[in-house]
Image (cartoon, rainbow, N blue to C red; front, side, top):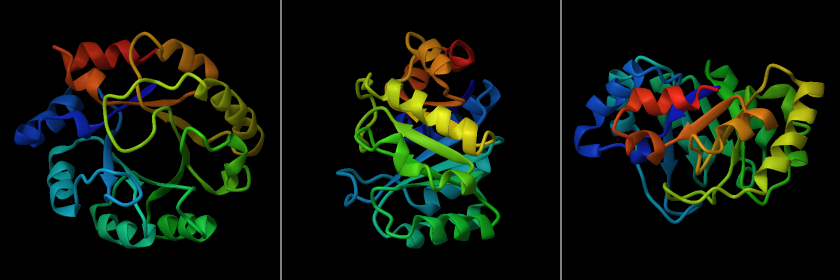
Length: 213
């Protein structure tokens, strides 16, 4: 299991130090939630702050766009050369075009599914994406309770992924902790996003290690 702590739960007064600390503690990616106050009812960070995160990070950035006008935001963050940019299928009218555009920028493209969106919605995108992020909470705020119904969706997604594009990673975001991580691993998850579980723990390393099942 690869671990991508979400900086949404970090101490923004000491953001660079927190980012350095999770990288030193053994995380695999630094997960960055970008919200525009329109697609989701919250507003987070822009490229100036994420640029500071990129300078502090020694692991690839995993940028999750929760926005309207995805292409505009891709252009904002692409100069930072993140490892991944993922966007919501529910918002994008031309997802194939945007996937190819992200790839042409030298970034790995991914697609995101809200809890209510079926796995089958990404079937025809699977050949072209590097990651599918399954939301196990409704996007917009950290610290929410895990929606257990997504486990069956992950199992269906894994069957599709294994048949169509075995190299595509399955990522999960929302309510992940040491109590449900083995179940998620067994269902087919490759990467877990964990915000409050990691950043509220006394030891980032202990928290990250507990997720690496």
